[in-house]
Length: 370
Ligand SMILES: Nc1ncnc2c1ncn2[C@@H]1O[C@H](COP(=O)(O)OP(=O)(O)OP(=O)(O)O)[C@@H](O)[C@H]1O
Ligand SMILES: [Mg+2]
Image (cartoon, rainbow, N blue to C red; front, side, top):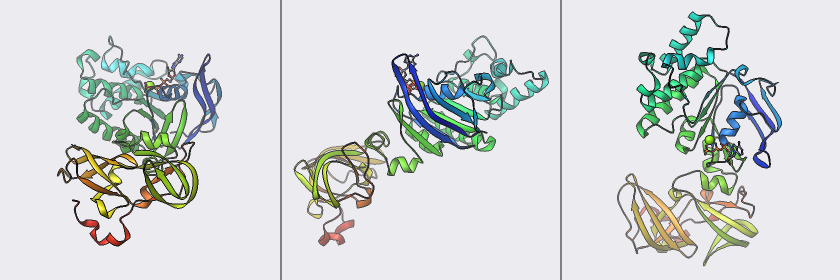
């Protein structure tokens, strides 16, 4: 277990600046996910922590100690690489034991540790096989056991579940989280998968283009995105984002005008999640439009509505298609769930638009559309 800090850490390769100055504190025993598009610097961040890369500038500390000059193998960090990187010529037992080779450790103690790590990820029966004789999920567990065998203070996982099928991912996700909570090591997991990040992590670091776009709880990122990047990146299907111009109490969006909760001027972007929009009778809402696409998705139906503000997506729970293409519908949304971003893409706290039912028709709220 260790508390990690990054103080103005950067990484460049020649003229290529991969990480902009990064500042970060991860608490002892915390489980943190790094989420972001391909090439944004996630693996680079892990490699800096593991000591496989040296920072170009800045300072990394574990429990207050600068680890800049500490060799990778002395950092007591376990790492699972994006590719499992198992040694094909070694048995599972030898693969797991590999990180102990430099440690002055009694043979029996080493053997005990290997057995223990293997048992933890339930591959105790496979110790004499070679990696080629294992399934992808089993190989993944070997890689995890190899990272755990040192009894690390910090566990770094680079897309450890990406090669598994959907069912196994869900199982491994839960197991990994349980192991982490039990052993309590500080954990960073890199993932492309938002669901993985949201279900496992205490906090998420959302990265874009070599910088941290936002750090927060899953709920912070989902409900209170700091900027347009996070708003658009988190959530599937993605948030509706429409550009407009504010003047006084009004926001012009295409041919539509909506009431703002306070005075404002200049360019704004309105953000609304598809699942936060309710479709009602066209005459019951300030904004209405015509349904242009209906996509049943199993548990929900995804609608595209052409409105004077532009096309908007709405998601309705339940498998029943309640509105057919060509139907006119009104769109309503709780005021606090409408987000507004300034021209630099930053969310403006406490500014919303009014997309509620028309005042005179509140009673009709629960009535189906059409
Ligand atoms: N040795 C290098 N020289 C120059 N650029 C590099 C080097 N290694 C990585 N990069 C660049 O650094 C950026 C970040 O790479 P990194 O591997 O950290 O991305 P990532 O977020 O892990 O992406 P992915 O999700 O695809 O694994 C990329 O644009 C990559 O091309
Ligand atoms: Mg990577």
